[in-house]
Image 1 (cartoon, one colour):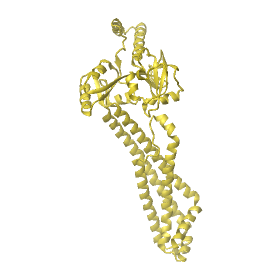
Image 2 (cartoon, rainbow, N blue to C red):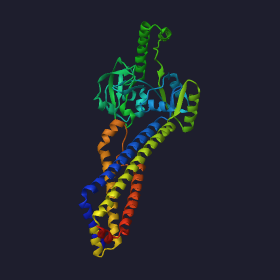
Image 3 (cartoon, rainbow, N blue to C red):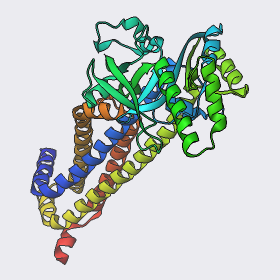
Length: 434
């Protein structure tokens, strides 16, 4: 009966101080909602990166390109390619018995900031999980075959953002948004298919026929060389080299790619090929999985740093709640003294303060955790769209679990400290002083 009275007294005290209690619970909840967002978004980015790295264990690109540049410019389309290599390297890798498949890629253009990448039909077959829509005249298994040089396959989210549909046409720009050398090509692309969502960087990409990239930049470089020779008179050697390629029936960009994505038969072959293609003086190669793990380690450090500041915020909030409770004690001395006169001992009265602070902590944790994940579920379409990740809104990450653990520990410690202050206080003497 005594402890039921104490519980009722705690509830009465919370109702009496609704504003301060609500503020305290809201502050803890906001910090935990932030932790939920950090954890889930970081996990989604990591999962997307790992899935992408598993698809292509090895990337071969131009000599001097760093591992990070090769990965970011080919798999994630967030960096500029370091240069080009001859298509012959893709052909050589294709004949290697240690290789199960090769996918040459060539990227230097964009549309409204969306990268345009030249690939072969095999690459689309490799990544595709079907099409939202496709031109019925196009063979889905050989989408860039035949005379489909102007065909463009658009990622699901790029199509949604720019309201693109099959049979639409557009012009690509050389480089990316903000490049000094950016200019619009006169080559018209036609949308022949839209991919189903892949929950990865491919959703924000446009793929076109590899040969069309050679055609565009072959003619483009030719005209640029002529213009510069006419205007500045110091590109004669380049122009002569260009003419030499014409004599052999090729444009200057023909046979050039930015990288080769390679599927190897086992990790041992991946390591051997990486070494070979990094030491030949013409190319660089990287083990995709190892490079992505390095990137993830940096991301984990950023996640830990954000978590550390969140933990600090939580601790400060708990201190604020603790101080608020102690401040309210002075206002409640008579109330607690009355409870003592009714025969309620020092321990039960002290326990009331402990329960009040502990309930505020637990309520903040519960509401913040629940609210954070519900908010993530509500914002999932927008987050997926903007970041190109497959977000799991109700997945609990280690940064969040640590936050719950340490907040509970801190809440118990602070609650116990407040409890001991009341336990040691002589309420009758304190009231008589007033």
